[in-house]
Length: 485
Ligand SMILES: Cc1cc2nc3c(=O)[nH]c(=O)nc-3n(C[C@H](O)[C@H](O)[C@H](O)COP(=O)(O)OP(=O)(O)OC[C@H]3O[C@@H](n4cnc5c(N)ncnc54)[C@H](O)[C@@H]3O)c2cc1C
Image 1 (tube, protein in one colour):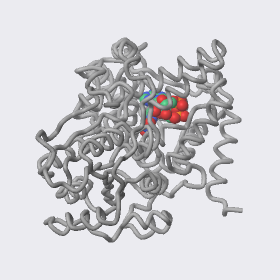
Image 2: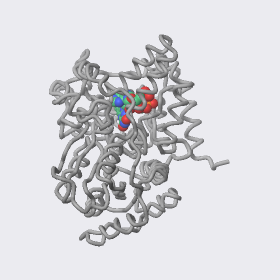
Image 3: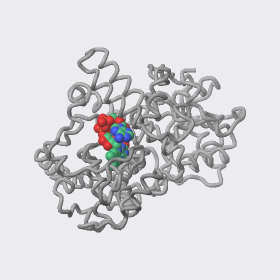
């Protein structure tokens, strides 16, 4: 078995269904055809049972907080993943409907169902629902983390300093190449008929108004689906897909990795990996990213040591801390889940004078007195991305300009999840809460913030080339709206 046993979570026990026609992989969080532990586990089980493998994806058009920007990026990814699966002997179905209901519909003829990692409340609830409805074993594979979330820690961690030693101690057990099994029984026309017969028996047959064939024209599919179009798509700048993720990461290693540590506080540069949006849709595996960065380190030696350590800290420690937070804190999207000291100090300063105060609409339109903040917000709104250093500054200022800290919290989260391509992710919830003190410590007491850490424009001006950043945002915003040449 190539998949580490500690990645497996059995939601419904039992023997594989007899007379089954296939093993089913319900693809949801790991939307990639390679470096995918859930897919590898499904292939291994299908081979053991001498059955073909069917991969299904349930597409709902009202996914929590998602708009056409997110859908376009995700569907571009599935348009790369589906043909790759088919070329490698697997079946693939895309159907509209609630994801666990689509999976349950296809589970009727399945020996067992395999699915990928879930870390947020609704995706975890979906796996429980499927376990009740599938009528066969259901196994989840923790596919989206280097160290599986339950292995890394069995509780909500306090801060990076508490999870770091746990991750460092365990990572070597997971940080190595995984052999990728290939199917021994190929998907064929007969299996196609049987998969459709499984649906015919099902009470809630998924709608076939969308099928895998629609992935040949993602733009048209996005127009046809009843999506929230209040936010424009950004495909011109950032296209989704495992192949794009791979080439973008190769370019990062070749051209930018060497600058990674020096440019982390330089928002006018583009020397971070850009992987967060691909990670959000499971188009790339964090394990693959670390392995490739490590190979680079091994080739170039000490010259890249600091860069590797910094990248490791972000991708392993900070990212997996965020997943730990959402996994063990059911109210991860609520102000209530902030640490006691932070809520106390913000509440003690709740009546401090706030001037100016801006409405959410003014913030969204980048209409504040602060040109740096306006540029950052414009970068997010127009392009779907923002450099990490500006994200910190951006979030902190919203506390200053909102009537209450609670209102500031909901604004930060709303803007983050509406506009960022990497929004709605565990890293979104943990980092938005970080603005308000999560995973941090008390600092010197100030107005409005109390002892929550502040960031000031003078600091930005001193440390960063803000003139170049303003120019960059202007250039990108114009590019996104220009007619293609
Ligand atoms: C207010 C605020 C909001 C944020 N919102 C999000 C969000 O919605 N989604 C999101 O993925 N990240 C978020 N981050 C974290 C971070 O800013 C982004 O992950 C990073 O900027 C993405 O760019 P990159 O992929 O080039 O990062 P790199 O610097 O190349 O880092 C590599 C990977 O490490 C992970 N990572 C980096 N920094 C963090 C961090 N602080 N916490 C957790 N993981 C991290 C990401 O997966 C990232 O892709 C937010 C940070 C702040 C301060």
